[in-house]
Length: 334
Ligand code: GDP
Ligand code: ZN
Figure 1 (tube, rainbow, N blue to C red):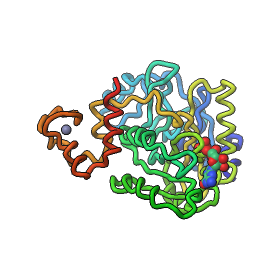
Figure 2: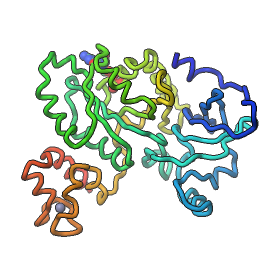
Figure 3: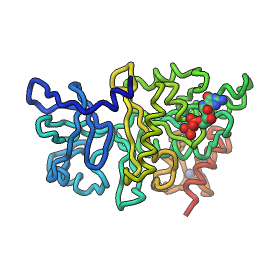
């Protein structure tokens, strides 16, 4: 079902009137942008001169927005997840609608930023209850990436079936994240347990799964929609053959609720190339927020400074010690 929707030949049908159509970019390939609209799929290109002055920033006067767009050095001006207005006769993207988020990282192959997904609503970090053991340090790194991009984040604990009912330890470790305010979903992709709750959480949003290999991301996609992991596997194969020059992402529509998309983002299997400013790191640990500004020194880095309110909260048990260690790790590396 989903396969047909995403794989179907682009439709050439044109809507009755000439007004530009609104759609969502779900695939980018060699300058071709695949856009899903209320009137079907269209393959569009971006007009040459539009590239330079393309406007997709958030607000402000037009000159200001154009200036912002020019300053932005992206390897590709449009990413999957972008909402666009297209001219269906010319097959051209006319306008990119304002983004509410963008998950970008330094491009490994080209200078500048590479946006993996635009308008991502939620990033779910997947860990396994066992095999492999949850890598909480990696989990924290992914959560930092989401916080830095101001994208809602959640945690999926997969392979709960392997605990055979002995769940206390795992649930206690994850309760730390629930207390911080992250949604934590416990499930088993293999036995399709807890998958409906995940499906409900995804409805109407653009979401992506991040996490180490082997935790069950493909199995999860498959549990949500049989055949989806095969499709994402096919995308990886294309990447392997070198037809995609940069790490690409693709959105897959989930049937059911309208406008529900899952992003397959090969770039989210690793945390390299992500640059979060060290000074911003303190804001990427939401549980620090009540204590920031209470430190003795305004420029406190919350390491060994005297009168540090964050450290005091760690000592008092208000902030989890291991989370604090993750913060130290991310800020101490030079
Ligand atoms: P990915 O690398 O994150 O995409 O992980 P995969 O989906 O390929 O899964 C890795 C391995 O874990 C495979 O052998 C799966 O069969 C297994 N697996 C995935 N989900 C579950 C689960 O819920 N329970 C159990 N017991 N095994 C699972
Ligand atoms: Zn401090």
